[in-house]
Image (tube, rainbow, N blue to C red; front, side, top):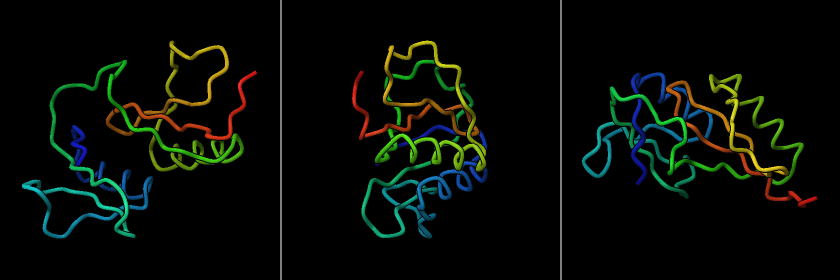
Length: 120
């Protein structure tokens, strides 16, 4: 289970269910009321926890979403932005990154990682 702090639970439910193809568990799970679970039953549940603290600019723990190649990475970034994500002006990219950084509507950072990236 991953617990994700959000300020607007209904908005987070809409974003993350669309982003990950998850669904809201009808009875909650593990003591949590708002738990998102994979539609196919395979994957890690995400509990949405109301938080008043802003997310850190450089989180030590974050979600990585994996894609097969650069074209899929670009398409996925566009899809997620259309759902409410924002591009992040990340100041810590390496010279040849295999990832892009986005933020969910609450500002939680996450990455889209190109698993087919071949370093230059």
